[in-house]
Length: 475
Image (cartoon, rainbow, N blue to C red; front, side, top):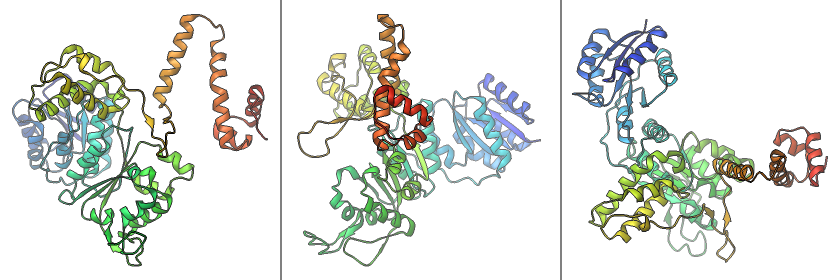
């Protein structure tokens, strides 16, 4: 019978986890302190220890190496209600099997039981020296981000960071580098969108003298500059297709070919890529190589937008007020009304916009209390920049699923309040279906059969809807 040891000073949690363990056929012991837990571990030699971080006396992280000595074969899962990136990294690096943020559901713990039964004990690694990362959050979404950073940092695999603009992708990339085996090497960051397609290849791979007009001196590319460390490619979706081929070869073979040279140069770097675009859609459209995508997305971390972690806003505000006020040598003070205003805003620009708003308010407050009137005006949703440097208007980015849902909810609420329609469902369909079908038919050049397969409806049904709305299409 497998043995479980629960170390937590909350009686209700000990009871709940003990009952779960017994139901699954485990022999269970509980302890309210790390010291008591260490004594029990030495006697019972548990297979799994569920260890809280905050305990009276010795804390859980300090107890981890001692648990390893007392019960060398035990797997340890760390639990905490006050997690941050440093806690996650220290727990995982110290050999913890998992890192669980409270409150958790029992199904999550049950999966840990299953993993212990299924896998052998792993040897613990030495804990790192922890540093400040600037990543702030206590929500479940951010705890998951912290855990995934901690898990992937020691590996050398490519990492894909996905998330809207302003969610902190470069901060995450720097954290992964800091806690990796390459932390003593360089961290080279480049925004692909800022590079002209004509110079992207030269910037990344370098060039020899005379390779093209203006190449008066040889240049070492960024892939070589990052050797021994980490290369962070932001807006990776913007890499030109010909350059994608060379990047894949560099990742596969550890060598680059400078522009104009027939001689490869060896390099060894860890690649972290980031994008706010949906790369699978770019792959389907033929704008991004599928083989490079699968290589880059070996391990993906999804960064939540600020609207999905609104509970973290007060923490972020406190962090930025103290950080920015310290730079300005001013006392950080924030009126309650200002915090309420901040928490009510949509923050389309995510954490970056929030930080800039706090900096704006500190400047206007001049060392006094930050009031609502010191905050900048609410910004509209993000827009994509013009493609050329002319006066062409910016094109709005497509709304997210959540934004679209909110628009439909607002439209429905307004119609119900007005009481102007008795066929609201038909009215909604008549608004949404025509542009939806027109866009699909344009994509498939008017071919009903191809469009129907992708839309997931029968070709006859699609043909009837097109006729109803007067939209052209061919069978």
